[in-house]
Each structure stands twice: as C-alpha cells, then as structure tokens.
Image 1 (cartoon, one colour):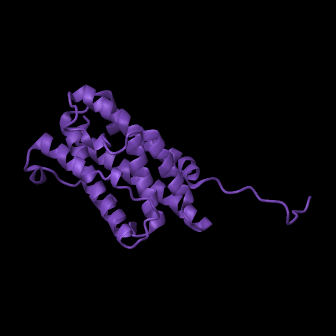
Image 2: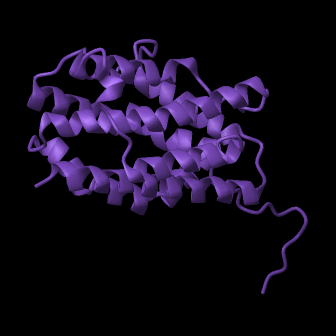
Length: 222
C-alpha cells in the first residue's frame, strides 16, 4: 500500500449542484412517473385537475417564498433568493383567470400539500434546507416545467393567462440563469455534513411533491 504524502491532494467533493442532481435522481424520476403527471402530459387530465394542481402550488410557493423572505430579512439567504423567481403572484393570476375573482373560496389544500407546507414552515429558516427545497422547485420550473407548459397549452387551449406560472418575464434566457443559480448553490459555504443535509432534504422535497401528485390523482385520474 502506498502511503499518502502531504503533497497529495484528495479528490475534491463534487459541486453541490452535481451532488443534488445525482443524489435525487431516483426520487425525481419517481415523481415524474406518477399517474397524475403522466395524465397531465398525455392530455387525459381534465382541466379541473390542472386547476387543482395550481391551487396546491399556491400553498407550497406561499410557504417557500415566505421562508425566502425571512432569510433575506436576516441577511442569511446565501444569494439564493431571486426576485425573478417569485411565483405566487403568477399563480394567483392563473387561478383568478381559471376560477374567477373568488377563487380563494373554491380551492382547498389537500392533505399531502398540508404536509409539504408544514415541512417548509419547519425547516425553511435553515439555509441548507431552504436551498434544497428552492432547488427542487425553481430549477424544476425552469426545466421540465417548460415542457409541462407546452403540453397544458396544447391540451387545454390555454395561452398566457392561465399558465403564467411557467413564464419568467424577468429572465430573458433560461439556461444562463440556471447556470448562475447552480453557481450560487455551489458557492454556499457549507460543511460536508451540511452538504449531505441539502441532498437529503431535496430527496424529502421530491417525495413530498410526489405525495401531492398521488393525492391529486386520487381526485382527478379515473
């Protein structure tokens, strides 16, 4: 066995964004393969199912963005909170378009969504865990969410109003922005234990998201 000398450098840990991608792959794919998502993409989901999804997203993003606001106020957001990514106003505009001005009286939060919100409220003030949830949501919206938008527009005849959740008017080119977001993730000053915590919390986030899809499927997939 060859001894390690002081001059030898151990292989560095992979960037956090890469660790997140690789560490959550199975959970991510499981969420994407859920019955609800397959029907949404395939055009066999009724419009009411998409509207219900928007209602659940409203609850989730309200909690996530409140956590981001608290981190910013505390000067502890690590540069991960971008005004360009805020989704709640867009979701509210979509729901008003789809359901009318009294949409708040017509929607409800499903049990799995309530669990998701509770998790965000419990851990959202901790930057590593906030980073895990923000990565899961926002990078998904900027990537696979753009495919979902096209499918929803095609199958339900929506354009602009009703699908503005998937529009990011302040971001002119999505890929460069996603690159910047990953660079901010990679630049977070985290211990090895905290890096592991981010990856594990992101896995939790994907599982919570999948549970929401299961609840939605129970209502809208026949």
